[in-house]
Image 1 (tube, rainbow, N blue to C red):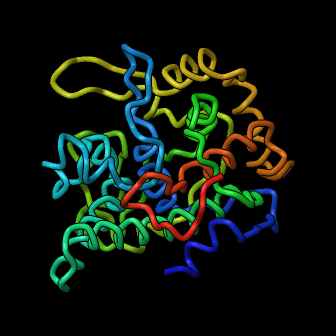
Image 2 (cartoon, rainbow, N blue to C red):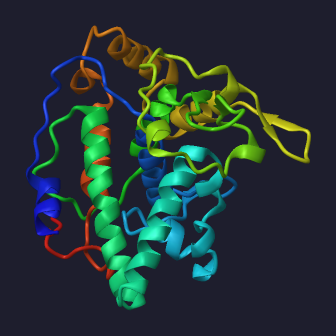
Image 3 (cartoon, rainbow, N blue to C red):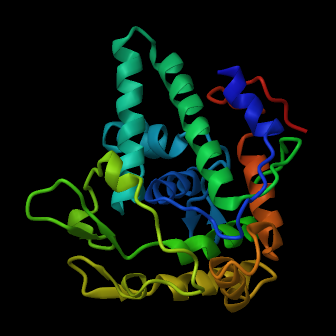
Length: 279
């Protein structure tokens, strides 16, 4: 366990290619990571999450009453995030069955979560990780940088080894709770292209007749709560997709590194491993 956690502060990964090598499971892992750091209260314009990777989005949502179904309903809004969420719920249940009490089981599940976040984040971002973990809380500029990464979200994915089903639309509410198999989660995604897939520009909210455009929602947030323009951020990501620059050269990449360093801080958090001090 300690070896995994040490990687947070010591691992340095340099890109061998300008392009990210992103898999569908990265959408699920980083999506759940985002939900565990940020829960945006839009009317009051505040983050209601605690900014730490302690799986509060699963185990503390609504007083902890919904953990068996994945906690925050946002964790079931698309199949990759739902799959990662329920895999962690299953891991937690297995630890309980093996004799852990609830505290031990959650702590072990958080360590498991950290391991997959480290693997995914470093593969996707291809950035040098911070040398220290910061005790500061994540801020809106860092949330804006993470929102820009929605460029990579696939509107449709392939399904494998399923009778009569070859494709899944990830914005379809009625199939969002599809647990994907290993082959499906390991499929490689099309790279950044500086745009959102069409499905995310017309997300239908069931039973309401309402249609939302995620790109417009992200633009509003980015340009209100950060010093950046969405169009410039997406243009930089498109250059990564064309192999013209690396993720290290993206002009807002430092905020993603800062976010990563803050999210692992264990100070005052009983669920986080204490081996890594925050500064």
